[in-house]
Image (cartoon, rainbow, N blue to C red; front, side):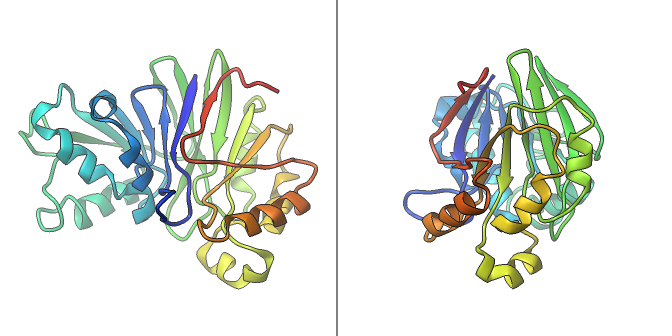
Length: 258
């Protein structure tokens, strides 16, 4: 299993894009601005898109990706998401006003995309991958994912804040090798962190004790212009975990190296 980080930033900058991970060659987890790193050939290989939630930084490049390859598509792209996220995409993006409705273009029989509703607790099988849909806590309905195959496993919280449900759900399965967690703010920004429902290092520390096992920890959704400050605080607060920053362009191959 190979996980390529296309975008992992909490904002945009000339060097960074928002959340999008390429899983193998055919699966996107979220479709933020980072997915603009895909080559033309890679865009054509995308068969499935797993969306954590409806916020723009996680879905904004999906319309552009489809538009780029619409006349040359060899297959329909299947978009897996909560019903809330699908409704948001239909009502506010693929509505014929902001963007064409690619769920009926080029035709209803062979559209560019097909929506697939998922629910918390559901288990998906995509090729050799087993994918569990996990609950998460954010300002809109949100999920995380646990992904595994014979080479290893990882979990992604999506955008998340202090909660019990994600950790309880993840503990129902064997411990993962890698954990990717949202961490956008500093302790001095606790008010906005709690309003926006994103972790900051101390709140994440308090939740990590709920997890069985201690996988490699990568922090995502870091703010592009104070990434070093957040990582410095995280490294101090989470010293037992030795957290690393998830970085655009990073390739993580399983089984992971120690």
